[in-house]
Length: 424
Image (tube, rainbow, N blue to C red):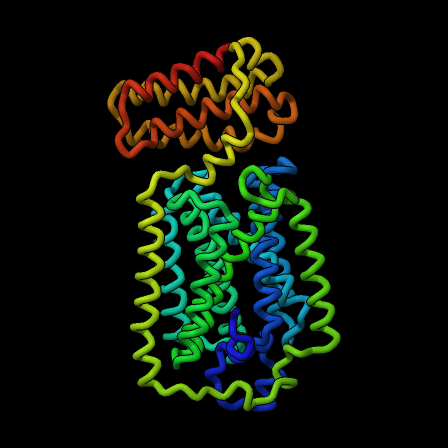
């Protein structure tokens, strides 16, 4: 079990608080309620983004644009408030969770950036944000969010933590072949290890941000486990049902916090947050966190070395085989203008492959992926079977052209098959 006292005192580095700061601080106290609702928010970020983009057919890019506008709106509201407000604060966290998930999905699903590249890049970006924040403000404690500058750094860091947690969680599923229900255990164990580290004297601010990142894959995998079909090791509630359950839980919790105010800083005893760990012990505990990180990497490496199928491939297999259509059947209900655009891009890519311009081919086929994703809501509504058929052919073409060791013959075969189908 996670230590309740730890969760109530996490990020307790600030020893004293003035009445001025209490009136102006823009974030809640770190109580057990903070972590409960944080995990609920991360689960919604995963399930609700998938429901809007996929189940409703809005599309990844359109969904990202919509929630980026929503994020700008709620952030403006939150930053203009003079002090912490439970409704605005947690609404901002929910929207950040959804948006951070979408930004990561764009890199991986839209532009084909490997999760092995996305994860370290986002981790470095988070380190840069923390570095600039600390250099300017000389603290990363959330108990010091009393200026617009610090609040801006705080929300930027949270956005990047959601993106990092999404990438790391998805990468774990790809590396290991674990189902989401099994994958939940890794971040849960790492959070427990972080609690132990704090109890042994680790820096509270460092522990807070480690736990904050880890709750993202924990919540995301929890949401996937509840949403996915039973044959994939899930409960089968679906993305809409999962989103509804967790949004209701979030709303209920926020109402309780707004009424009882157990997370308002001036309502929490100052002595509850007094840091007692010595700087020397905090430095020693950095080695402990290093050992925990090595152990986690070892577990992932062992799982990766064993024969397995990535969870995304398991999901595709669970939908059953793609119905094979003749070119005439595949194109019968789809607009000629769309098919002509796709055909032009495919032919250009094929010409580049044949000419030996692999970089050019990879750049050009990205145009196909973009055009196909943009047209998905329309085409899928017109003919679901044809859309699925073409989607499988396009996936095969993308995989062959973007392979780490691309073979000309394999690329030509995949592109020619797609071209033939598009011609009808």
